[in-house]
Image 1 (cartoon, rainbow, N blue to C red):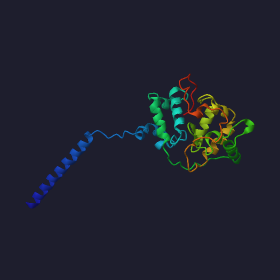
Image 2 (cartoon, rainbow, N blue to C red):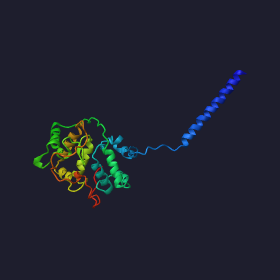
Image 3 (cartoon, one colour):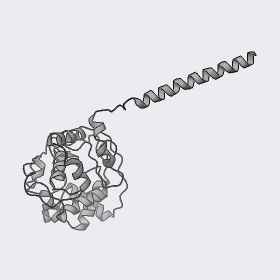
Image 4 (cartoon, rainbow, N blue to C red):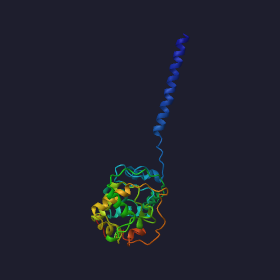
Length: 256
């Protein structure tokens, strides 16, 4: 009889515990899910393609957006919205958003100071490596080609307010953007200095400079420079961070 009583008590205890557990489960299911109303949470729509915290996508074509100048990021969001750059997914994402919110998005990603991974190995011939370094650091005066550092900063990490850095980007992305400007598929504010420069580059130049840039490690300080030590070698509308022509006639779109 004591054994039967113990078994009966055990059964009742299990039933009570099961009921408590079931009640807690149902209560949790009925409670509304918690939502973190922050920019980081809302920007998951961006980081799905551009990588965690905007560090760059894994496919080599979605660039890093973390740490780029806010003026540059804001320009690009407007360009996608207004047809200056043509990538349907980006256009659909930004079309419903107000300009103040687009600026808030740009400032969010610009404020992120995240470490960069080491550059991936790039297969370059010694001649291409030398040519890429020349174009990036010294230019080619005979062909009226300024050096990349003259516009993008001596460390190639960009310049405020709106010139992006060129290091830490995949070679495929650099190739696609230089090629898009060279072929007239990407545009920016007039005067479009990048269109002028890339028209003077041969295809082998594009390959050499993109390969050299993609193979360079970043300096300890990856933030964009506050200013250039000398005036720009070419008049460049986009470098000033202006968006005065954003509402003017559409131009052919570029790449993402």
